[in-house]
Image (cartoon, rainbow, N blue to C red; front, side, top):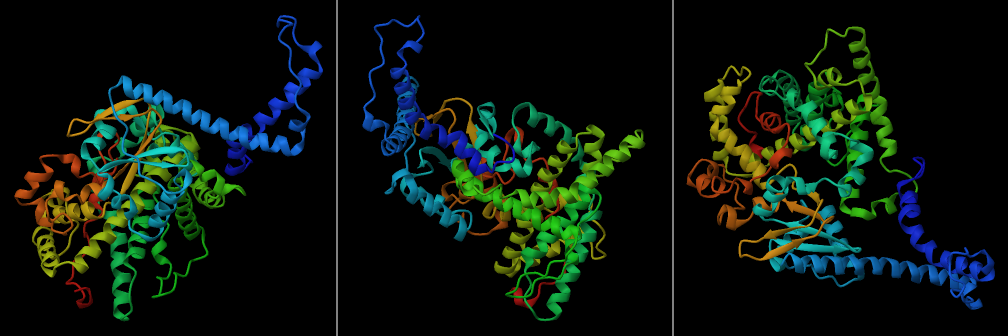
Length: 545
């Protein structure tokens, strides 16, 4: 379809219109052939004549009715044929279907409504976890004629991410909603394109770069200064807002060599939104955040997302602002490389990418993909750590602070990679935070071929080609049968005592904050290291405890 058409209009013309037009078009064609029998090719036997079409069937109302009825026949006929094919394949594989969540409304509209309501009002779609009470840790959602697998089982997730990696890809269920924002970047590609982006980007995340705390230190000092300023006034402070600005500023400097300096904008006052600066950097931050919000909604409504954008691509105005900021930066780097080909600057991801390719779209897509992964996920981890340190037992904070002071020292130099590695309790606090509040609470893949999942009890579940499988990382991390009876309790010591060996080491796929397999997070060490307190660690304000 032409690029100028909105996603909704394109969807109507490509998917809905053909089904509506086909039945009345067939009636009119048959009527025309009946009226012009001499136009039938001689190769067709003359005994095969076209019977007359009843005149009532040619009336506008009858043609409209045939359009609706015919499209329903096409949809349900296709679904029936697919069902018969799958039943045969299931019989051939000696498997059974995954239990389907019961719905009261046609097309599972009540299930869809509850899911959207949960995404809007609850943390990480609590409704998905609530369904496990009745259906167990593996079930199927049937919404608007499409089936979606949901699993909380480590063995199933291991198949998707590792052992059956070639069978599962991001697929159109992910590419469609994300393409207008993430393009062909590493997190939005499959097959050879994914390998190309992965191989191009991976060398940048070397130990030397992820252990370089200087950029993050400067921006974290700025963040601490803002926190102290606000605390001195006695007013509340939005720590999630600070964490988002901190990670955006440090990530853009780490990736582009220049920070958007979002922390220079005034902090929000209690009960009032932040005052936004009217400059290109602030516009870029706001637009990128808004575009990601569009993508989140698209994924939540699945294949029907284009129908919500009949007037136009909802991400386009936001991405226009993003590109207006990013394109000149990329163009300048490419121009510099061409003018001085022997002086490649690979201290930033931008410099590293420009050394590998001159394609602006590829470079820009990759930067946005890594920015998405490096900004929101790290901001979430920092916010969650603040939350747990503020709401859990004071002894956890005291012990963490003492370890940092013992290892790094009171003069507060930048910690070395080895010092960070030696702070075992710090790592335990980070792991426990990511266990109970993973930065990516769920993910999805699409099957490229049919397969069978064998459950622990020996049941063989049929997995049809083309189905989308979602897994709940947060649900997996909170299962008491996998983590013990205290699974819902924040306790960093579970990573240091006998529970570590009993649960996690016995099955590492019960803890997947960075996922696993060949597509494991490129920057997992960066995200973990950027979540630690590299700035001075003063005693906590009394209000926090």
